Length: 208
Ligand code: TMP
Image (cartoon, rainbow, N blue to C red; front, side):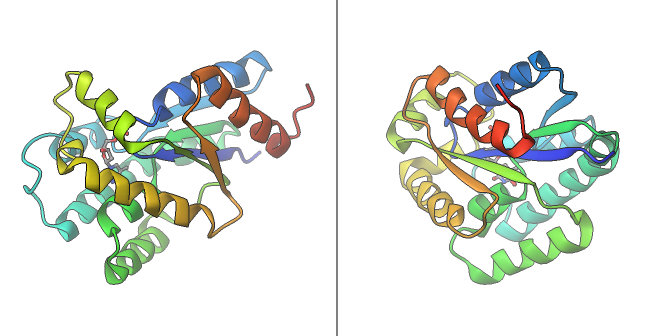
C-alpha cells in the first residue's frame, strides 16, 4: 500500500509547524498512520546539514551552493525517512519541501528555478500529493519570528522585503498546479486548522 505525501509551505512564522502538529493529531485521532517530519532536516545527517543552512551570516553561501546543500539534505531525508514511510502506507506530513527551494533560493531567477526543477526530477523524483501554502501578513510573521529568540534566523535576517517577495512568490506558485491549496493564515490556529482539515478530509475521503 502506497501512502500519501502532504507538504506545508509558507513564509517564516506562517504557523506551518503548529499546523503540522495539529494535523498529525487529528489524523491519528481518526485512526490513520501518520509520520510528521521537516526540511531541512528530519533525520540525523540532514539535521547536520540544516545547521549549516539556518545559522550564521546571511551571505555565507552563494545561491547555487545553497541549492546544492538543500538537495543534499533532501536526498538523505528521502532515502532514510520519506520513502520508507510513504512506501509503508503512512500519511507523511512534511514541513517544507522543494517548493521552499523554489521560493527561497530560486527567487525570481528563471535559470535557478529550472536547475531546482531538474535536480528535483533527477535526485528526488517525487512530488507532493497535496501542498498547503499558509498565507500570512509578512509584517506579523517576521515580528513573530524575531520574538522567538532562536539562532536559526539566517533567512529571517534577509528582512521584510525578502519575506514580502517570498509571500508573492508563494501566491503565484499556488495558482500553478492543482495540488496547491492556499490557506488564509491570518486567523486563529484553530480556524486555520479547520480550513486545512476540510481539504484533507476531501483528499483522503474521510467522512466526518
Ligand atoms: P523552518 O524554519 O521552516 O524550519 O525552515 C528553515 C529555513 O530554511 C526557513 O527560513 C526557510 C529555509 N529554507 C530554504 O531557504 N529553502 C528550502 O528548500 C527549505 C526546505 C527551507
